[in-house]
Amino acid sequence: MYRAPKEHIVFFLLLLIFLFSTDQKAQNAVIFVDSPAYLAVNSTATINIKINNVTDIFSVSFDLNYKPYLIKITTISEGSFLNQNDSVNTAFVFTIDSVLGKVLLGITRLDATIPGASTNSEEVLVSIEVVGLHEGLCPLELTNVGLLNTDLNIIPAQVLDDSIY
Image (cartoon, rainbow, N blue to C red; front, side, top):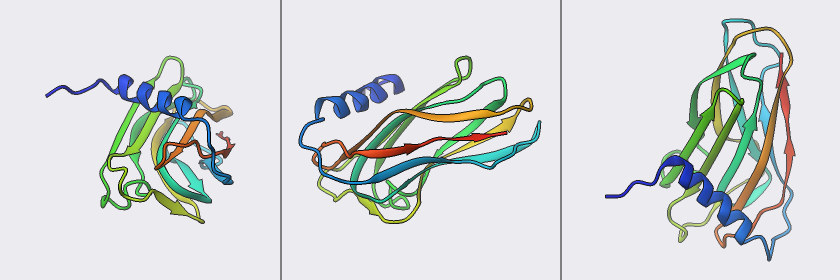
């Protein structure tokens, strides 16, 4: 059985987002970084990527940029929103580039016949465990954000970054 490398799956998700960028439904989704204000050297913290005010989301992809000399990513785990507490099968792939300070990540539901996830409150897409390496302001910037609904149309979203010190 052929298993595509993670990079190919992330690329495929990004390609889908750009290929099906017409016929958008008006939504005011918000995807944002939620992190603690302070992280001491050698301490751990959780950074959550959250979403709010979204209807019928099927797939999400994004890059998270950070300063790798200030924090080290130790664990990345899928939140319970898209998989609806493990009741819906999803593909969850990511790559960490600890030299450039970039995470490439994608999550998609595997069954398009099931309605997409919806919420009007903050829901966790991804949790990222980090360790503080040095003191300093570390911006946490989401780029290349793409949200798709079950019809594979782009869901417009406001992106809010954060930082940790």
